[in-house]
Image (cartoon, rainbow, N blue to C red):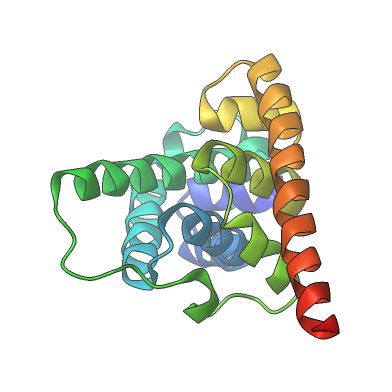
Length: 175
């Protein structure tokens, strides 16, 4: 990927398109996890692609392209979330189950969407996107120990949600 990034930085548009294609699923998963609204997800991905294209030459370490791209996406998501707080919603947001999400890991993502934002994004970046604790700290601009704490608490919260969901399912089947 480093060679592809360097080509894109040199102005090769095909290389940039290939980079985006390779990372679009990861961008979508992170954006859906944060925004839970397909219209906003589409906007934020478009803004991320434009920002990354305009600022690609400023990326000093090509090996961190995915981390850098994810950070841009999260910044755009946070901007939209901030704007939402200023607006009173006219109708309820879509439920996570109504959205088109990659079917591999669909149940995991559904349960993940029931967690608090601070835990959901860390778990998503760690388990789904495969970022290290150090990379997550860089992306979210937080201390590595904070990332570890949120991972630990996020796992505990996920376990509670998972057990609650499966216990309810068992009782429904027996009753």
